[in-house]
Image (cartoon, rainbow, N blue to C red; front, side, top):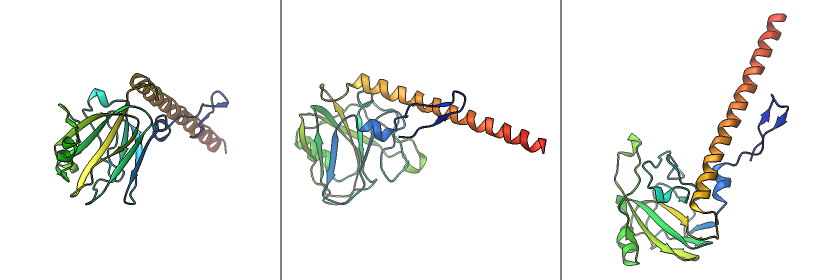
Length: 208
């Protein structure tokens, strides 16, 4: 967290929580049998979907908003195994491409997962408008293991808590909105500070 000076008030703003800090409000721990980058974020319109690409999710179904997205590299290789440890009962969602999915949907359905009636999209032209599909399953607190991938797979996981072990869905949405407003305010303060500094430097130069 960073403190941004407020020159007009002669004091400092409160720390502005970033996405990484917000994601720690719930305890979803992800592990993999391979050494790969993994991070988390709060689900919203435009949230990044992978750790190594700038692609984003749009038309996000409302049931995902405020949940925790667990991000992996864009392409996961054969025999990758992902394990999630959940602090509370949740609904787990897996978002995959309809093409490169390592037969994961078939394996998940065999384990009792269900196909969602809607799914987000990835609008960036470079992505090529590849269709996505989403599966979900209510799960209890504890360890959730995904089936080993049997081919190259592009996926992301979203965890939406369902009990009091973490923040409720509406409360997480409220905090995400408030944080966005705080960030906008902080950036506005920084802009005003730079503008004042520019004016003062200009006046000083003109007085020489």
